[in-house]
Length: 92
Image (cartoon, one colour):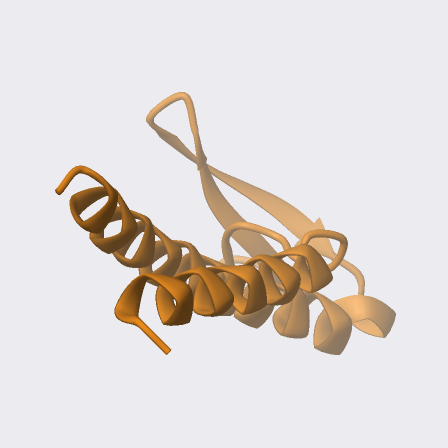
């Protein structure tokens, strides 16, 4: 099997993995707020840090969703590299 075919199969698997994570991610960090008694989701909105209150009963789920974003980001970076390799091979 030639390299181009292998890369295209890898790209297909990456797409499947990315699609599986699209419904279950949140961008940000869930952490115990030092100024409040509960947890907060901290993220950037228009270059400003914004914190949202996270209820106790969803803290674990929110933390898992932020971990999914990390996985998603890694997969997108890998997909970009694979796409670049495919582009180089197809241009020859």
